[in-house]
Length: 562
Image (cartoon, rainbow, N blue to C red):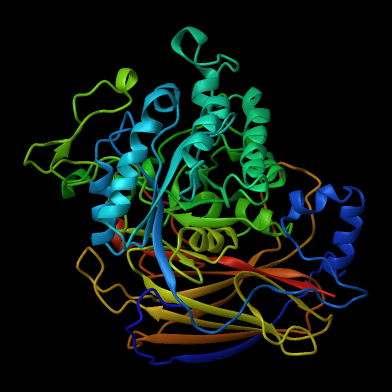
């Protein structure tokens, strides 16, 4: 699929073969799943592994998820954007939407910080601004959401499509379940139910919050609601069991996390006119609420970004892979987290956010400011495959995992087809999908990448140097809910992209005689900063040029064996 209809098709074709066997457990996933689900009862099916299709009868395969349908269209967007209604933000809603449109985005989510003042004032004030932006920029979908202080954890985007109950649902959700509200003393307008918003005491409230959102969908008050965990390893407070708990509590709502955080300009060196901080503002270290398993080592630091991506996403065999190895649908995105934009001339307004819910209109100083953010779409994009450019369809695409996280326009689009070459599903599925093959069949993966056909906003046409095909066995639910590694996941094949390649490049890989269930995913790089074995390099605080280290990450495909 491509984000731009105008492109050429100059193919670079490379066919390779491989094999995939689960050395530890070669049973079909259908057997492992039945054994696991037998201990859960019917209610556990959806909450543990998401909406997995059941077998119709015997060993007959179920209907594939996200069936491959040829080339389609990507819609680029950003689900993490702040305005003057955040205490640390400054822009008008219209400014952010206008900039998103200027930088090629099709959809945006306004996500000001939750808390006492936001629930009391801001959520009602931002709604008419969003509605006006929808009228002024009709070619951009503008969602209303909020950045939720997850009780017991970090932040998350929560958003809904437009509807008569949208504001009421968000306000009730925030009042009852925002960690900032729950940790604020009653005398100051909060509830004072937990000592700190990130303490473990808040975790039950997070699960209740997600169940509340799912209940709004089931009751028909809204057609869909989604949650993505933001900057998940920035402070190490998002424990592995919390990710599993969120997905289990509301599998139709809690669907993923920021694979790449915002604040990508923060690492630009001061000598180059930058802030000289950490890329993504990932400069923390463990604290009293951090998961101890994430402690930095001599060779690895989970509190830093790697090629601009969160460690949980960038590490092969890391936390993301540990979830995928269970068969859990869990998707990654890339956002701007735009608060104050690098080299923009505006500064915050003088309003009292605590008393009015707004910083007031930004002030134009005429002097470029040194900040850590980029405008929406300027550097980061979340490409979503959807059947139409409509509010619900784009959210359905995100919910289904038809998502590619992209930095610096390193690619313009991606088409993936995974199918059986035997008697199984010959049509195949695409990104975010699940297909079913017979034991012993060959499984073909066809990858078509639309290379950048124009300059990014650094004024350079980026060059994709390689694409990694990563795969690992699906071993079923982890016995330890705090497991965060998947040791059997590896880079199966790295495809080199010819320097002379233009238009669309095509790669093929065949997994021979598949014996056990597995998943696969893709990532790509400009090849500028790699370890000796081809992985992303940890970003250096104060010395990270985001334009010289570009990556994309595509969401997985699951292959079930019957």
